[in-house]
Length: 507
Image (cartoon, rainbow, N blue to C red; front, side, top):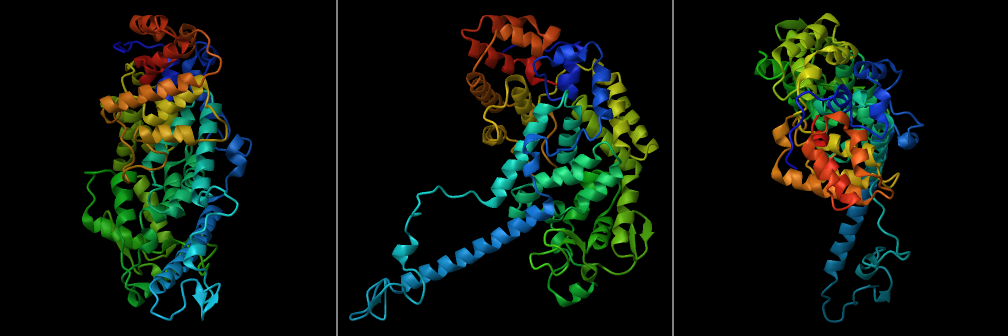
């Protein structure tokens, strides 16, 4: 649809699109002329970022330790089954071409039944006697339950500003479910445990929680990192892994070009040795939990970013992380990313500077940063030109027309995958792109149109699409958009055109 986005959008639309997850029916009226106050009310709401047991799917969600331990046990059983099947196949292959006079396949010592106590090839290939469909792996079931809880939360919140902050920080400190079964089982718990409790707290507290979480330690391979001079390093072939240290400095805190060196990366990696996760055997602690393995920690003092950190076990890395969180480069890096996410692809320098100063003055108070975003004139004067990310778009559709089948996240998960932003599966440690050109391709717009049609066809009771337009977009609707929807050939087409309108796509 060829239409321009209003240069002076309605403050209610800014609150719901730029800061939030899109309007639900009635939300525009509930703002009642106080868009800033509506957003700030979310910041004052206790535990607004948390997924509680009464959040529909929330009562089905285990903690990360339980999820990982469950995955470990399932993975062990899968290995036993693979080994058993391999032995069966090898035995069957060995008896497939018997010599003259030998027993035929499926016979042991000339007797029918099992060969060497193992099922024969024919028995191993038998279909499930009950005809049941294969049960999804436990990791897939955990992932879907976590996804459902996230979608439920997106539908429940008012504007969704804090939920957008959760998504921002979850992408900033990303892990990928494509890494291995353990991360797939625990990615949702990682967000609930290391992101949500701190999203309106201090950045340094979130940083500590993120970097010690088993999902992050697995994703960036710190579980395998061993100090060369440690007791384990002298006795084993495993060595230092720099992945976590590099990404903390480059992506999580200081940013590229901030002045740290390769020597700093190596030194920091040595400091982080010993931060690991207890294995299935439970020798170091409860399986799946964070533990500090002193035998793998590099002994001695460490120099990082020009400061010496005395030997001190786990406290050495904690002290380093706290100092890095308070570096001016970290304040500028975080401020730039927040301004890019909420204001414009090329954020106004004055907005970045103000956010960086608030970050430094408040010791990384993320609630203060969120309030500053609301108060900044740039947040309300910049036109709505940024393309909604796939998650923002899918959430906006769900809020506008309803989610569809309850307790089944497969459709929205499929939409996200088709749009190139599969949930908790970024292409790399730098997360998903946060600029318009990453999502505005012709192919991406075609997929959005397909999704809009699917969503429109699933509405059981469609009212007047033009009235729906007023409820979701309001006075910022362009004449072109209003005309196209009014002239739609059917109600379903009108709703689909609404969800493809620039005013719905942009934030």
